[in-house]
Image (cartoon, rainbow over all chains, first blue to last red; front, side, top):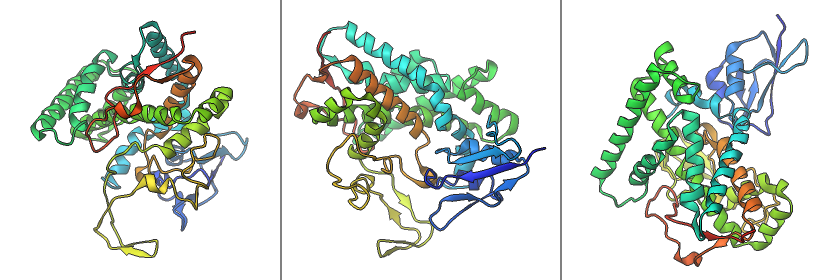
Length: 74
Length: 314
């Protein structure tokens, strides 16, 4: 199965920390409380999908590393 | 409420309120705006914008999202008015209204449990029954919170925004000439209006350093969002109302873990509301002097009783 690339747009991040709460092993807050991925490329993970779908500012983007297409969040 | 309880509950509803999901509701929001303005225009002037537009718009949207019968909205207005409308109201009356609201949702939850539908209440009931992710009481409180939270807030943000706009005819002309500025104007309106009365108190969970001062753990803090929204280091010439400025970094929806869950929904409602009001009611103006407008004596929200308006008949 294809891997996923995670990125967080720090300009969109509003520090709600939903992602860290949902997938604590996958996201980490920096010194300004903005989120970022622990690892930029991962095996598919439902918690990460859940975190991306729940981000209030939609700052998390999740892309199929093989195809470059966005991962379906539903 | 703090993490982890807050996170567990917020996660259950967060995905329904993301920009992507809410954007899908935009055509329906625009449809409700159109229906309400059409109904107002068909009646005689002056019209009360609170009863005819600003209250029914968010009420109808949140009712449809939750799956609450729109016919019951009159009853919610009465309960919500009793609960937050007047800080001097007898606490017994407030408790009675709360009990009635909880009772109403308790009964509706049972109805939906028997007959689930494609709505947020049914999804929350499934989260309760299928995977035990919230208690029965949390389920009821969540429904009440979503209903009340998405209702007087947006309604009065429409009212206060319109009052501010009508005080600045030049900005109205700018918006009418270029409706593409409406999303930007909505952020500036959120920045410049003061929807909240007394902001919710926060309690520090650890020592916090801010502006060279240490606030010890366990202290109560009242964040003055309205003042932050006029921080000259963030917004140049902060007291100037300018619908063309980029005001998106305002704090009117709060920040961090308690950032308003319904922010994106409120934005879509406000944008469609002003697109409709500006586009369909030329010459929209107050029917009484602004000084005669009456606010409810509640402390949570600056809530107008009535907003009588006139416009030019086409």
